[in-house]
Image 1 (cartoon, rainbow, N blue to C red):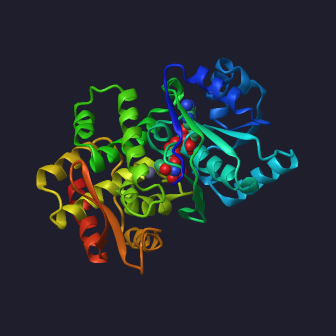
Image 2 (cartoon, rainbow, N blue to C red):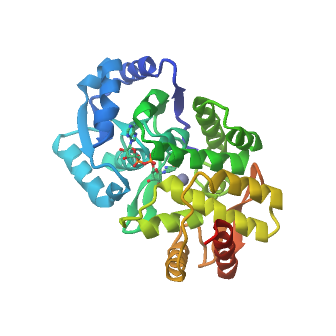
Length: 349
Ligand SMILES: NC(=O)c1ccc[n+]([C@@H]2O[C@H](COP(=O)([O-])OP(=O)(O)OC[C@H]3O[C@@H](n4cnc5c(N)ncnc54)[C@H](O)[C@@H]3O)[C@@H](O)[C@H]2O)c1
Ligand SMILES: [Zn+2]
């Protein structure tokens, strides 16, 4: 099994990062950031961590559109031209796009160099930076290329959230809701009451994810429950990628969880009150889009490409009560169509 990474939270993250870098005796430090995090986050990091000031900097455009093999190739070429050796460390400073692409670039360059994540978006802190999945999209298909490689460490400091736009915060909350729905009813209750500190929610979300990943690091069994909401959500995200209606990952997953919960309800896996809890968490807080027949058809086609399907049958992870989830549940096309129809009725479309 791959060794789990060290996860460092808040207090003293920066001094712990400094000690980590000192101890690592890396030949070179390379920071990967995007056009926003280079301005909003890198200066905070450099101010608080002396060794980071010596790092070389790689900057890429912000946004999902950069999560491509072309972008990786450019990064590999830059690393190679700069003669970065096997003992270098890549420091990924950004949201889930940076941790996904940076992890992948590091895991492949010279058959793998060490990397660490410094997540700066809520989504990356609560989800994307832990668990070791990294990779890029292939054309419009999400996360088709990648590896599962654990970062050496993840340093989570919510100080970075001060500059994160509101829409991006809601985006991250969607993955925390998912974590509660699949693994922790108490976390769902905390989200409903809306009184728990964000730091506590992030910590819980990370602990839950790590516990699942530890049981199944290579995504062969129980780790698949982390895909709840993602079969339909990824297809919706892919469909709108690059259009004027492009959705953020968490926003697409919120709709995905809504519709997949309707399938679970239809299969009698969850009760009316549980479905209501989910609808109440999602409907008022996310843009619940209406899909035309044609859009629904295209989304369905994208779903058939989803990597979770075997023999062209659609397999989903569906919750069987709040805080519990089953994986590899077979779902047929007509059940999905029915769920889309009910979804449209509920949102009043
Ligand atoms: N590997 C995994 O396990 C995993 C899990 C969930 C999601 N993901 C991936 O994560 C990606 C989404 O992550 P994301 O929502 O963080 O997207 P992102 O990396 O694009 O970040 C969102 C936006 O916020 C900006 N930003 C980030 N931190 C900031 C800060 N502190 N201040 C100001 N702006 C800041 C970024 O520049 C970007 O514009 C998707 O590609 C998704 O597939 C991966
Ligand atoms: Zn996700």
